[in-house]
Every structure is written in C-alpha cells, then in structure tokens.
Image 1 (cartoon, rainbow, N blue to C red):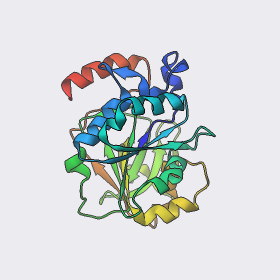
Image 2 (image 1 turned 45 degrees about the vertical axis):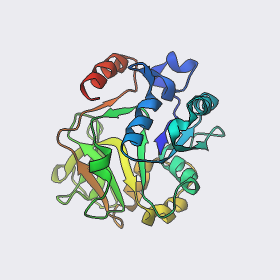
Image 3 (image 1 turned 30 degrees about the vertical axis):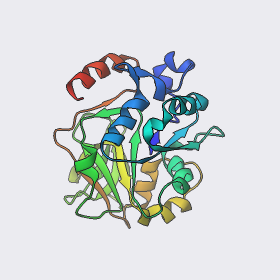
Image 4 (image 1 turned 90 degrees about the horizontal axis):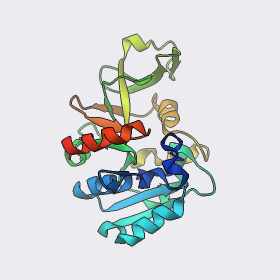
Amino acid sequence: MIFAAGLGTRLKPLTDTMPKALVRVGGQPLLWHVVMKLKSAGYERIVVNVHHFAQQIVDYLKANDNFGLDIRISDETGGLLETGGGIRKALHLFDPESPILIHNVDILSNFNLTEGLALHEAAPDALLLVSRRQTKRYLLFDDEMILDGWTNIETGEVRSPYKGLDPADCRQLAFSGIHVIWPRVFPLLLEMPERFGIIDFYLKYCHQCAFLGLEQKDLQLLDVGKLDTLDQAETFLMHNS
C-alpha cells in the first residue's frame, strides 16, 4: 500500500494545484518512483489511497495503464483517515492471507524491498524499518528489537503500555515510513476507530503483539516533504538509483 492521500502542506505552493504524489523528482512523480521500486521487487498488487486532488492520481495511473500492475484505489475523498485508518479502510482490497507492505509516497531510500522484507525469520505481527538518524521522535525497542514505546526527546513525552519505561534503557530508533503488517493483526485494526495513526495502533498493542524493528545500518533515506528537499532528492536519486 502506498500512502498518497496527504495534503502535502509542506510542499506548497506546488500542492496548491496537485497532490504530493505527483510532485516531480528526477523527471518523474514521487508516486512513479515508489511504484517502480515495488514493481522491480516483484509486487503485483498495489493499493493507493487518495484524498487531495484524488482524481489527478486516478487519471495518472489510468494514463499509464497502471504500469502493468493490479493497482487499486482506496478513496478517502470523504475525509482523511490518517495512516492507521487508511490501512483499516483498505483491508478489503488486499489478500486476507498475505502480509501488507506499507510505503509512504514521499520516502526515497536505498532499502532492498526484495531481500529485506521478503521473509522475516522471527515471523512477527509487524515489522518496522528503522534506523539511527537524528529526529525528535523515536520508537523504543528492547534488546530483542521488540517495540516497547515511543518518545519525543524534545518534550520528554513517553508513550508506552509499560509504566515507567525509561527511554535511556531502550534502543531509540527512527521510523522510516516503511513497514509490514501480517494478517494476524487485521482483526485488531478493525477494532480501532475509523480515523487513527498507525503508530497509535502499534503503541496500543505492542504489549500483546510482536512488533519488531528491523534496523538497517547503512540505510539512506530521504523524506521529500518540504520544498528544500526537492533538490536534495535529485542528488539522492543519482546516488541511490
């Protein structure tokens, strides 16, 4: 699933007339880069959620014959559902017995989707790609890379089902926006409200589910979320294509 429903407010004025997913980097829309990455990794069915200038995305995919893939649209024009709600709404569009890879449309990386996420030995309920990079918000993992909580190092806020969890005792890693959810947790997703963030879901159930972090030490990742990152993205693609 490609998250493409966001308003892209940090990319204004470009997103005053188009969705973030169609903002071009290296001559192609962000959506094209993610679709091609998934296609080259062997993925055949992709769900794209849409909201902001939704029809433009639908028309773009149609004009390109869905790039020879089974691409399905999850329509959120009635209201943004956030990352968790977006997955929940789209569940019926997936194979109920297969895990779902989720990829933000504005993330460029050197991560190998074929090798890194094909089969994970630990058979978790979810697998979150993380890395050691500077940010304000970190996911907190134990020594076995099981998710225990979340912290904002700027405000000191800690969120966890484990009372008294000390971030200093945890591995603090940054989330990449790339993760896999296994069918075992689909019923739990359906118990959530219509609109919620996926990190809220992970934090709610991490004490009873195996949500594992996958750390890639040489991960090169760029969040193309602001205007000043567009030039960086051109250089990034040249070195990580």
